[in-house]
Image (cartoon, rainbow, N blue to C red; front, side, top):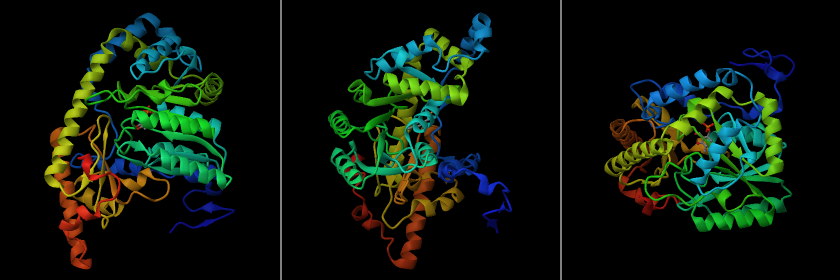
Length: 437
Ligand SMILES: Cc1ncc(COP(=O)(O)O)c(C=O)c1O
């Protein structure tokens, strides 16, 4: 048993009472706790969001590294600027142009992954008790950051077309009427993590209009936009509105997360503060990494490499959807046009969090929907990732998951008489609708 007293810490951590109040939000996320179990080789993990980096030829990276060290070794090994290497910032403009964004390299700040941009942005804007509006569900590790700055996350519902503008309007009105300070809307409009859905063009316009008229800044997080499977998604929200949007991008999904290289594109004043915050946190993002990625972008066919990734993920998504259709035809799920994730809705009687230990015992792991809500919702949902396992592993994983689901339903039927599979259709929630198959 862990004993604690206000003056003396507890018997596991003598400094328990000394931590800042904001660390109360720094609990290990469900995703993180899962990694340890799910990384056992016999477990098919549909839980994490790891890109399939083996699809990137290693010689492209070693070639860029060798060239950087041969030609600019002392620069690569030195501290750099807090804003990032100018040549790389110019190349980042080319990447963003593929999403319809035009901007100036002066307004790009290179960060240690987009995760770090989220952290810096939160540090700049959130005071304890502020409200951050986010989709419900939302990206788990962004919410960990918002919590660590003691914000309250207010979830606005989504449907198969993304965030619902009318609901956003209502939430803003309600929060303002209650005297709450809304700091920004955090949104992942394209190939959402975890829901897999994409905000339509019309809704992008409408949401930007609402935010503008209500004075709410938009933080657009877009790691997956270039990983589309069919038609291109609508252009980024930042392509429509410059002053009211801070845009986050990353090389983690289109190249490799090991470089830990992301960026923010921000209006001048915010950009200035982001640079200062970046310097305070890390002095400068890694010079070595930036030069290697810059070399890669100038020498390699990086657009072709993104096509390769698209092909890999498209095949895996198709494997997942056809396995779901085969083994769990009574359930509903989203059909993402890009990105890494499918959002599955269980029958009302099941609880994805409670079911997880049983799933791991059956050698399949997933992330329960509760991880993606700050308010305890999501018990009826599961995030399934198709990015990392092979199509064959995905098929095995979904078959195992189907066994777990039917085992849980059998149990319920035995003890409460509520496990009739024929009732599943009736028990679907409003999101996702059944026509998303
Ligand atoms: C929505 C979203 N934002 C940000 C990140 C962080 O990415 P990065 O590797 O650039 O830090 C992720 C990673 O999975 C993500 O899904």
